[in-house]
Image 1 (cartoon, rainbow, N blue to C red):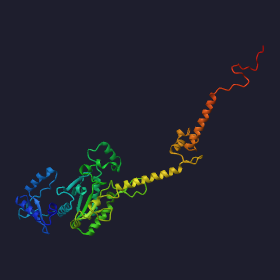
Image 2: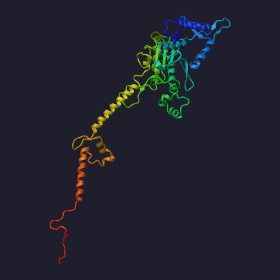
Image 3: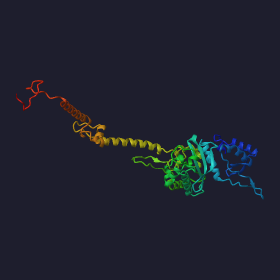
Image 4: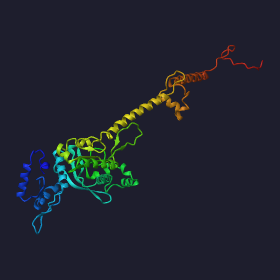
Length: 403
């Protein structure tokens, strides 16, 4: 409570005094004192009612009331076995808030995600911190009380939930998603169910998931992460981009669940804003935003694709230039227009000599036109009269009549 409400305070006196004041007004009570002497405070029935009136109109869900029950024979307070898992969840939220990741009223616990078969996968903690570069993050707090393969199953269910369509999806989208098993991958994320529940993440892929390990050893954590990384590869690992270009090293994260892991001990000792998060598939720990970013993803692909397109264009241009015809008369290369004229079926028949360039062809055309013009002029000129015939006198024929 102290870390969550007053993260900048070096001691819990202010929080303790506030709780004592609320206790005087019968709004909270001490349920138990843990072995480390930390007190567990819960709302009374009256406090729970006032909290609901204050928070639920703002869209903030209040947890169920922990009723105060006593043993009828001994009078001992019952139900005081406070869940250590719940304590770890609260501590994780407090460390995130202390690092500026999430508003104190921006955390939600036990948020359900209903799958197509009706199963509900509940996230231990959901944080929305867009101002910190984390619009949404689902957290699973694990105290190593369950098998590592159970964590893989949780990851699979988050992956499956991210591939669902909303109930009121248009028929065309539904038909496309049902056309084949992987057809949902061709449906934009904006049309999927998760985008109706959470804001866009600002990154490729589905809603990010964080596994925070608490109250366990480093060896157990390492073993669990190894299983999660290997057995859950299908759900978190990026793919190769479907492109004909060679040399593309970027990866496609569009259908993957970004998964980061850390421990509550690291969060407590170094802070949630420090480099304590490791992204599955990477070997080093990073800050949360750096771990969620994809420097080898879509942005790199666009750069590499543009570079590859430019290189392909240069190569094709060089190959085309090597095929460009050379004039057999003057030795100059054909222009694009002349090349097209001599090769296109509809223009080649009137392109003249196809082995000469446009200039030489123009010379040929000019000579042909000059010769044609000369012939036309010659045909239009009357013949010259013979020298032995007087002008204006009829020409005698070979046979004539003599008087």
